[in-house]
Image (cartoon, rainbow, N blue to C red; front, side, top):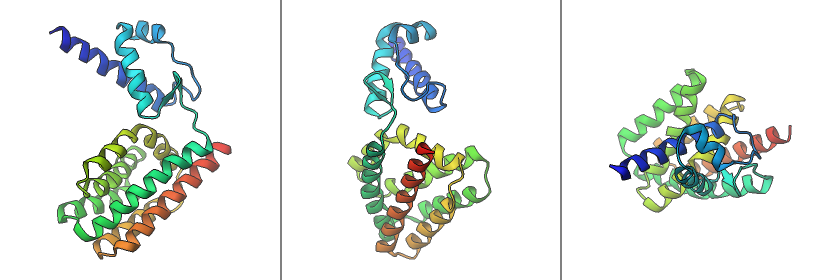
Length: 205
């Protein structure tokens, strides 16, 4: 029973801190004080400490401060995504199941007509379906551990309406359904490169 309570406190602490970072309530560069956070949540310092450690692994916290990624940090993150998601898109063009193809189409459609939060969710699913199709647990785990930091970039491109975002998703989708593996990979890499450039320009602006 005590173990279950400890686990619950950890989950609550993790979600509380993560959500405050993702919402912007805890701004970039903010120092996290374990005692203060524990008092706010009414828990001991242990689940707070464990939560901060996990968020460090996910790239949202560095040296107990909310991450304020440099240009090089952004480039490094996107380079990994380009390599992995480019390969995944190529794989999809050869092996994607019909049910997953339908999911991609739905994501593109929502991207054209949905509200901001719906577009955010559809954007996330679009990339997750493509990576998931590889069936490669190592690749899926690497991308999964990057999800929180990816969310911040996704929020930037969706909320600030990066031009041609959904059109690029549609082009990737078209290359996949037409079994154009090299084109799907090229388009995915170009798509992520434009995301990177948009984020860099927005941060500098």
